[in-house]
Length: 143
Image (cartoon, rainbow, N blue to C red; front, side):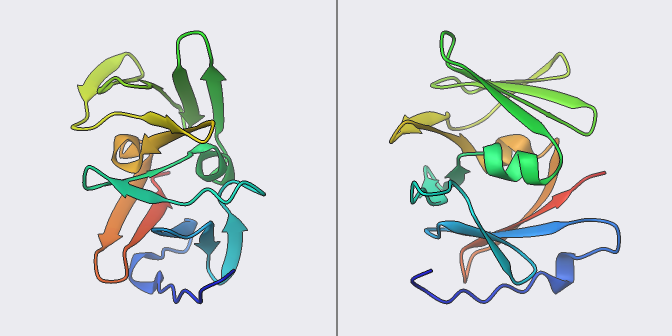
C-alpha cells in the first residue's frame, strides 16, 4: 500500500455485522485494520464518477457471503446476497431486485475490462454511510 489510510468504523459497528471501509482512490477495502485488495493484481480502485462511488463489486459481495455473475452477451451483472437477487446492466439506469424495478441517477460502466458499479445501487443489500472528509464509504451487511 502506498498511502496510509486511517479507518474508523466504530460509529457503524455492530456485534453481529461485518463493517467494510472503502476509501476512494485506494486499491484496498478494510475489515477492521485488515486490508483486502479490491481487485487483486489489477490495481483497480474505488472511484468517484457523477458524484457516486463506483467499484467492481465482486470482492465486496463475495466478502459479505454472496455471489456475483457476469453475462457478457447482455452486459449484465447479477448479485445474490441474503435472499436478494439484484441485476444491473452496463449503460442502463434500471436495477431489478427480486422482480422489483428501481432506477439510478447514473449507470454502470466498463473500465480496464472491469464492470464498475455504483455502490448506491446496492442499498437493498447493504447499509451505506459516506464520510466526505476522508472520502470513505462504510458498508455493512443488512442481515
